[in-house]
Length: 299
Image (cartoon, rainbow, N blue to C red; front, side):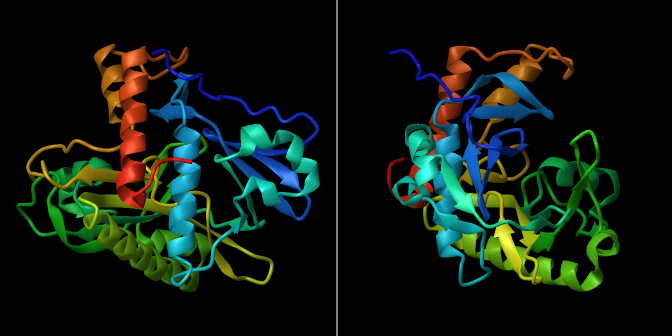
């Protein structure tokens, strides 16, 4: 059975483009913004030549799931996710928007990515090996790769012009956006992580770490924005095979990274395309994560 064709470009003629990210195309929609998640996939800071069918729907619908369930912790950007209730001028695009878009409030994004880590993995593991710290936070000696931390930690990051995530200390983050705001975001980040990790655990999944983004309204209200606890912004592991001391199987684009390492791509343009088996296995992982976390199939 051939793979479905991924949606790599939305090209909604007649709408004014606001911004294009690696995955999302954002359009002007009156006082709001229309955020559309494509099926593009990035690795090593480059958008690849192949997409993952339905990936944008997974990101949108899983984010909507979490946005709805975390309103008691922090308000969020979502205005509407049901295309049938979108403004009349967006109805001609209903077919492409259904399931992969949301109308959101405008905010000024806080230029700090708020990362919560409950386990030692990824860039945190590399830093720990080098000096026993993660983002300047001293950790106990003798920890292994993928070990659960004594308690979750807040490790902010910022982006350089190249698009790489740069880990910084909480003090450095406070110098960028203000100590009071970063203290507020730290508390929200850890509360959101605790809520998400507890829900995931009940579904047989470990939420090892995740990244949140926040925005400020003109009145100064803090909103949760962008995406929430998706396989693109999180490290999800199945509980059953979990064993510290090594990297863990995960519900994300690890198949893509492994393939790119296998073909010895130099991580510079031109970007490669992916074979069908890598696309298919990656799609299956995204869909499995969605089903297990939400308890339902993708719309």
